[in-house]
Length: 212
Image (cartoon, rainbow, N blue to C red):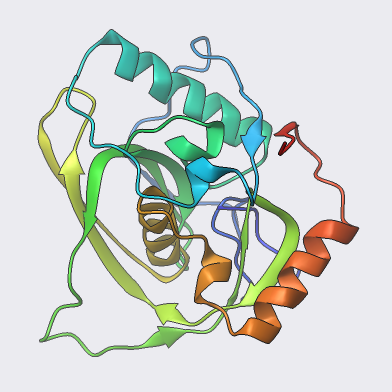
Protein backbone atom coordinates (compact mmCIF):
# COMPACT_ATOMS: atom_id res chain seq x y z
CA UNK A 1 0.00 0.00 0.00
CA UNK A 2 1.19 3.51 -0.77
CA UNK A 3 2.02 6.39 1.50
CA UNK A 4 -0.63 8.66 2.94
CA UNK A 5 -1.99 11.30 0.62
CA UNK A 6 -2.37 14.94 1.65
CA UNK A 7 -5.69 14.93 3.44
CA UNK A 8 -6.76 14.45 7.02
CA UNK A 9 -8.17 11.01 6.29
CA UNK A 10 -6.79 10.04 2.88
CA UNK A 11 -4.85 6.82 3.17
CA UNK A 12 -2.69 4.82 0.77
CA UNK A 13 -2.06 1.39 2.04
CA UNK A 14 1.49 1.12 0.89
CA UNK A 15 2.85 4.36 2.51
CA UNK A 16 3.94 6.66 5.30
CA UNK A 17 2.57 7.16 8.80
CA UNK A 18 -0.02 9.86 9.51
CA UNK A 19 1.61 10.83 12.84
CA UNK A 20 4.59 9.90 14.96
CA UNK A 21 3.76 6.50 16.52
CA UNK A 22 3.28 6.36 20.27
CA UNK A 23 3.67 2.57 20.45
CA UNK A 24 5.18 -0.19 18.31
CA UNK A 25 3.59 -3.63 17.90
CA UNK A 26 6.01 -6.11 16.36
CA UNK A 27 9.75 -6.10 15.75
CA UNK A 28 11.58 -3.88 13.30
CA UNK A 29 13.28 -5.88 10.51
CA UNK A 30 17.06 -6.18 10.28
CA UNK A 31 17.84 -3.68 7.53
CA UNK A 32 21.32 -5.15 7.13
CA UNK A 33 19.56 -7.98 5.31
CA UNK A 34 17.74 -8.00 2.00
CA UNK A 35 17.83 -6.09 -1.26
CA UNK A 36 15.22 -3.71 -2.63
CA UNK A 37 13.57 -4.90 -5.83
CA UNK A 38 11.57 -2.89 -8.39
CA UNK A 39 7.79 -2.78 -8.05
CA UNK A 40 5.47 -4.49 -10.55
CA UNK A 41 2.68 -2.23 -11.76
CA UNK A 42 -0.87 -2.50 -13.07
CA UNK A 43 -0.94 -4.68 -16.17
CA UNK A 44 1.67 -7.19 -15.00
CA UNK A 45 -0.06 -10.63 -15.06
CA UNK A 46 1.22 -11.62 -11.59
CA UNK A 47 -0.92 -8.86 -10.08
CA UNK A 48 -4.15 -10.01 -11.69
CA UNK A 49 -4.46 -13.62 -10.52
CA UNK A 50 -4.36 -15.51 -7.25
CA UNK A 51 -0.79 -16.46 -6.39
CA UNK A 52 0.44 -19.73 -4.89
CA UNK A 53 0.30 -20.83 -1.27
CA UNK A 54 3.64 -20.99 0.53
CA UNK A 55 4.55 -24.60 1.34
CA UNK A 56 8.27 -24.28 2.16
CA UNK A 57 9.15 -22.38 5.33
CA UNK A 58 12.87 -22.12 4.81
CA UNK A 59 15.76 -19.74 4.28
CA UNK A 60 14.46 -18.72 0.86
CA UNK A 61 11.21 -17.52 2.42
CA UNK A 62 13.08 -15.57 5.10
CA UNK A 63 15.28 -13.98 2.42
CA UNK A 64 12.18 -13.05 0.40
CA UNK A 65 10.66 -11.34 3.43
CA UNK A 66 13.91 -9.41 3.96
CA UNK A 67 13.78 -8.27 0.32
CA UNK A 68 10.12 -7.30 0.69
CA UNK A 69 10.81 -5.05 3.66
CA UNK A 70 13.68 -3.40 1.81
CA UNK A 71 11.49 -2.93 -1.28
CA UNK A 72 8.62 -1.49 0.76
CA UNK A 73 10.88 1.01 2.52
CA UNK A 74 12.63 2.00 -0.72
CA UNK A 75 9.22 2.84 -2.20
CA UNK A 76 8.14 4.56 1.04
CA UNK A 77 5.22 2.16 1.46
CA UNK A 78 3.35 0.87 4.49
CA UNK A 79 2.60 -2.58 3.08
CA UNK A 80 3.79 -4.82 0.25
CA UNK A 81 2.62 -8.14 -1.19
CA UNK A 82 5.04 -10.61 -2.78
CA UNK A 83 3.49 -10.33 -6.24
CA UNK A 84 4.27 -6.62 -6.16
CA UNK A 85 7.91 -7.60 -6.63
CA UNK A 86 6.98 -10.31 -9.11
CA UNK A 87 6.98 -13.30 -6.73
CA UNK A 88 4.15 -15.82 -7.11
CA UNK A 89 3.66 -16.54 -3.39
CA UNK A 90 1.16 -15.56 -0.69
CA UNK A 91 3.19 -13.32 1.59
CA UNK A 92 2.87 -9.71 2.64
CA UNK A 93 4.83 -7.40 4.92
CA UNK A 94 3.73 -4.23 6.67
CA UNK A 95 4.99 -1.30 8.71
CA UNK A 96 1.80 0.63 9.14
CA UNK A 97 0.17 2.93 11.69
CA UNK A 98 -3.39 2.74 12.87
CA UNK A 99 -5.50 5.85 13.46
CA UNK A 100 -4.27 6.06 17.07
CA UNK A 101 -0.66 6.36 15.92
CA UNK A 102 0.32 2.83 16.97
CA UNK A 103 2.92 1.44 14.56
CA UNK A 104 2.38 -2.17 13.46
CA UNK A 105 5.27 -4.14 11.92
CA UNK A 106 5.29 -7.71 10.67
CA UNK A 107 4.58 -10.22 7.94
CA UNK A 108 1.84 -12.74 7.16
CA UNK A 109 2.23 -15.89 5.08
CA UNK A 110 -0.84 -17.45 3.42
CA UNK A 111 -3.19 -14.80 4.82
CA UNK A 112 -6.94 -15.30 4.92
CA UNK A 113 -9.22 -12.37 5.72
CA UNK A 114 -11.71 -13.25 8.43
CA UNK A 115 -15.38 -12.54 7.97
CA UNK A 116 -16.45 -9.36 9.71
CA UNK A 117 -17.57 -10.23 13.28
CA UNK A 118 -21.34 -10.41 13.67
CA UNK A 119 -21.16 -8.90 17.15
CA UNK A 120 -19.18 -5.83 16.00
CA UNK A 121 -20.76 -2.68 14.62
CA UNK A 122 -19.78 -2.32 10.99
CA UNK A 123 -18.31 1.14 10.33
CA UNK A 124 -16.91 2.15 6.96
CA UNK A 125 -13.80 4.29 6.63
CA UNK A 126 -14.26 6.24 3.39
CA UNK A 127 -10.68 7.50 3.13
CA UNK A 128 -8.64 7.70 -0.03
CA UNK A 129 -6.45 4.76 -0.98
CA UNK A 130 -3.34 4.34 -3.09
CA UNK A 131 -1.11 1.49 -4.17
CA UNK A 132 2.55 1.16 -5.08
CA UNK A 133 1.47 -0.88 -8.10
CA UNK A 134 -0.75 1.97 -9.29
CA UNK A 135 1.80 4.76 -8.73
CA UNK A 136 0.69 8.36 -8.23
CA UNK A 137 -3.02 7.43 -8.27
CA UNK A 138 -5.51 7.87 -5.42
CA UNK A 139 -9.22 7.22 -5.07
CA UNK A 140 -11.78 7.19 -2.29
CA UNK A 141 -12.65 3.62 -1.34
CA UNK A 142 -14.87 2.79 1.65
CA UNK A 143 -13.59 -0.17 3.67
CA UNK A 144 -14.54 -1.60 7.10
CA UNK A 145 -12.57 0.12 9.85
CA UNK A 146 -11.75 -3.26 11.42
CA UNK A 147 -10.08 -6.30 9.85
CA UNK A 148 -8.35 -9.47 10.97
CA UNK A 149 -6.28 -11.98 9.03
CA UNK A 150 -5.08 -15.45 9.97
CA UNK A 151 -2.04 -17.11 8.47
CA UNK A 152 1.46 -18.22 9.36
CA UNK A 153 4.79 -16.63 10.16
CA UNK A 154 8.03 -17.36 8.29
CA UNK A 155 8.57 -20.45 10.45
CA UNK A 156 5.13 -21.86 9.69
CA UNK A 157 3.60 -21.04 13.07
CA UNK A 158 -0.06 -19.94 13.09
CA UNK A 159 -0.62 -16.21 13.61
CA UNK A 160 -3.55 -13.82 13.70
CA UNK A 161 -3.28 -10.08 13.08
CA UNK A 162 -6.09 -7.60 13.63
CA UNK A 163 -6.27 -3.88 13.14
CA UNK A 164 -8.48 -0.82 13.06
CA UNK A 165 -8.60 2.32 10.94
CA UNK A 166 -5.73 2.77 8.50
CA UNK A 167 -4.09 -0.50 9.58
CA UNK A 168 -7.34 -2.38 8.90
CA UNK A 169 -7.29 -0.87 5.40
CA UNK A 170 -3.71 -2.11 4.99
CA UNK A 171 -4.57 -5.69 6.00
CA UNK A 172 -7.46 -5.79 3.54
CA UNK A 173 -5.47 -4.16 0.74
CA UNK A 174 -2.48 -6.51 1.02
CA UNK A 175 -4.58 -9.67 1.33
CA UNK A 176 -6.53 -8.61 -1.76
CA UNK A 177 -3.26 -8.38 -3.71
CA UNK A 178 -2.47 -12.05 -3.12
CA UNK A 179 -5.84 -13.10 -4.51
CA UNK A 180 -5.39 -11.05 -7.68
CA UNK A 181 -7.24 -7.86 -6.78
CA UNK A 182 -6.00 -4.27 -6.81
CA UNK A 183 -7.90 -1.57 -4.97
CA UNK A 184 -8.93 -0.04 -8.29
CA UNK A 185 -10.83 -3.26 -9.08
CA UNK A 186 -13.26 -2.27 -6.31
CA UNK A 187 -13.96 1.20 -7.76
CA UNK A 188 -16.73 2.32 -10.06
CA UNK A 189 -15.84 2.34 -13.76
CA UNK A 190 -15.56 6.12 -13.65
CA UNK A 191 -13.27 6.20 -10.59
CA UNK A 192 -11.15 3.34 -11.94
CA UNK A 193 -10.68 5.20 -15.21
CA UNK A 194 -9.68 8.33 -13.29
CA UNK A 195 -7.14 6.39 -11.18
CA UNK A 196 -5.55 4.91 -14.30
CA UNK A 197 -5.42 8.39 -15.82
CA UNK A 198 -3.59 9.64 -12.72
CA UNK A 199 -1.14 6.76 -13.06
CA UNK A 200 -0.56 7.45 -16.77
CA UNK A 201 0.08 11.14 -16.13
CA UNK A 202 2.31 10.66 -13.08
CA UNK A 203 5.84 9.40 -12.57
CA UNK A 204 6.68 6.85 -9.88
CA UNK A 205 9.32 8.01 -7.42
CA UNK A 206 10.70 4.46 -7.08
CA UNK A 207 11.96 1.74 -9.42
CA UNK A 208 9.25 -0.16 -11.31
CA UNK A 209 9.17 -3.08 -13.72
CA UNK A 210 8.04 -1.92 -17.19
CA UNK A 211 5.21 -3.94 -18.68
CA UNK A 212 5.92 -5.56 -22.02
